[in-house]
Length: 76
Image 1 (cartoon, rainbow, N blue to C red):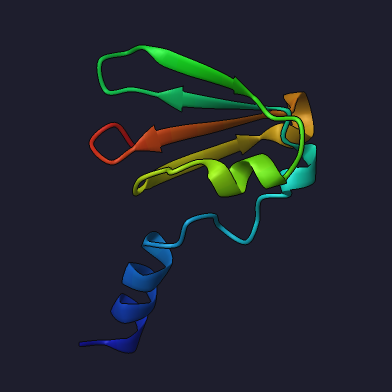
Image 2: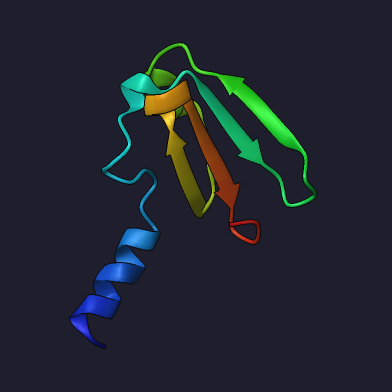
């Protein structure tokens, strides 16, 4: 397998991308496939360790409004 393809597959499975500054996140919005959204207020970085997020995509707008959006697989 091509090394670049392996790298893309490995990075797609990471829990949190390296580019998100968790210290700026105040709210996590979990977007369900049925259109509903769960809002979780984040008080400190340790709360992320207790979350059991599945594979999906993040949209980081925390530098603008403190919100990190999460779209699980199938809704990304």
